[in-house]
Structure formats: structure tokens, C-alpha cells
Image (tube, rainbow, N blue to C red; front, side, top):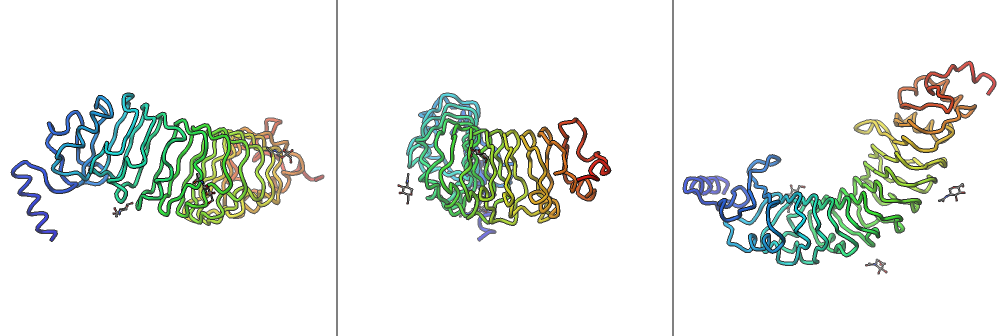
Length: 345
Ligand SMILES: *[C@@H]1O[C@H](CO)[C@@H](O)[C@H](O)[C@H]1NC(C)=O
Ligand SMILES: *[C@@H]1O[C@H](CO)[C@@H](O)[C@H](O)[C@H]1NC(C)=O
Ligand SMILES: *[C@@H]1O[C@H](CO)[C@@H](O)[C@H](O)[C@H]1NC(C)=O
């Protein structure tokens, strides 16, 4: 069968037509102003760049044509501010594995827009568009192979209720004004591995965020206004956590047990990034268990008082390579403090 396919492919190549599934680009004039090129990521399949289409009707017009092959790897459309809507029918029976629409004015996606590609779509990445709460999040569960949903920098104001997928691994909703999260927002995403909620104006995290996410590895919460981390905030059920990014928040209160489940040394060292927060003390019960598991701490720009609470740390030089850029309010580097100063503690 493989030989036959190869044989047919070479015939088509000789005659200059295209008919070998995803490994061939349609004739240039048929898809212009879209351009087709062999995918750098996976040789043998094709990507389309349709950044130059006039608007959504123009895009639909191209996909209605009798294209000799209809299965592409990726669609990319960059810097096109005329496409406002992707309707049911826009893509006709054409399929993609990845959709990358970056920088634009996309406002509306209909429920059936992707009905031709329910089994092929692996990545939806609509960044820096104008999508709002009307985005049809309920269709996510109908895709059989979707692993990435990236809607960074849109106008979504409510975290989607009941977001459900048995395949989704990466969810990025950064730079949307979410302000709060519902209870157990990731409960129906069992394969979730990375979540980006950076700069979404969160103040409070609901409890047990990751209790049903055994694959969590990257949690990005930078640039919010989170003040308290309590022992039931994360409830990591994963032993793969590698990167918990909390930089640029206002974290002052950290309860014992908050980071239970963070383990270092699984594949790469794990890190907790607390750069630019309001941490004042280094409670041994909270931080020592992490350091014993080789979890690195990024601690620049906090407000460490460096009183007796850090004595245990100052005396444990073997941990010093794990705590990065911690500076006391006095201006002294935490790692350079003389243990003798703490003899009365
Ligand atoms: C699902 O996606 C994977 C890559 O993530 C790919 O190897 C596989 O062929 C896809 N399955 C289907 C049915 O398209
Ligand atoms: C989400 O699920 C709950 C419980 O099953 C249900 O009451 C609610 O209507 C659902 N919300 C949406 C938007 O589907
Ligand atoms: C954070 O914890 C402090 C001290 O327990 C409490 O007074 C405050 O209300 C908490 N803030 C939030 C937003 O939960």
C-alpha cells in the first residue's frame, strides 16, 4: 500500500498536479493569495498562510473551491484585522491539524465552524484577537484529538464553565480579564499538563485547583494580584510539577502544605517562581521540605526580614544553590549572611 502511494505520488509529481493527500500543495493560482508550503515541522505535509485574504468571505471562497487535496497541517493568518467571524461553512470540508490566527480582530466563532476537522484538530491558537465569552467552549469536548487551546490576549471575562476534554493538555487564557475562577475549573480536563492564567487579574484562587490533574507540569499565574496561598490552594495530585510561576503577585501569606506534591528531580529540577512578591519570612516547615526535594526557589524582590526565621536556612549551606536572588530588606544577600549572627536564635 505504501509503495502504491509512493508510486502515485511520483506520477502526480511528474504531471505537476496534486492529489496525494496532505503531502501536496494545490496549484498556486487556485489558492492565491494564500500560499502553501511544505511544513518545516513535519516534512510531507503542507501549511497554508492566508494572512493576505481580504476578509472572511474571501477565505470561505477559497475553501469552497475544488482543491485537489483538502487536508493540511497548519493554517496561519497573521496581522489580518478584516476577519471578524469564522462561520459554519468557512472551511467547507477542508481540514487542519493546527490553526494559528495571531494579531487580528476575530470576534465570533460559530459552533459548527470546525465540523470538518473534529478528528484532526490538535491545536487552536487564536492569540491577540477580540474573542469574548461567546466563544463556543462547549465544542471543545467534541474534538477527539485536541491538545492545545490557546486564547491568549482576547476579551474573555468569564472562565468557561464545565470546560471538558479528554485530550486537552495545554490551556492558555492569559491576558483575558477573568478576575476569578469557578470551583475546580480544570476538573474535566484530566490530561491537562500546562495552564497559563498569567495577567488575568485573579485575586483569589479557589481551593483544590489541580486535584484531578495528575499530569500537571507547568502552572503559570504571573502578574495577578494573588495574596494568599493556603494549604488547599493547589492540591497537586501530580508528581510531575516542574514550574509554578507566581512572579509579580502580592503573595505574603503562605501556609504550610501549600506546595505539597511539588517534587524535584523527576525529569528536570522543579522551580517555584516567587519573584517580586511580599514574602517576609522563610518558615522552615514550609520551605525546608521543598529544598530537601531539590525544588528551586526564585525569590528576588521580596521583603525578607531575615530574622531568626531564616537561621535554619543560613546554617544549611547545602540548600543555598537552590534559593536564587533572595535579598533581605537590609540589602544583604540571604546566602551571604554569617551564621554567627544567628547564634542567639
Ligand atoms: C492525534 O494527534 C497525534 C499528535 O498529537 C497524531 O500523531 C495522531 O495521528 C492524531 N490522531 C488522529 C486520529 O488524527
Ligand atoms: C455546568 O454543569 C453544571 C452541573 O452539571 C450545570 O448545572 C450547569 O448548567 C453547566 N453549565 C453550563 C454552562 O453548561
Ligand atoms: C489573606 O489572609 C489574610 C490573613 O489571614 C486575611 O486577613 C485576608 O482576608 C486574606 N485575603 C484573601 C483575599 O483571602
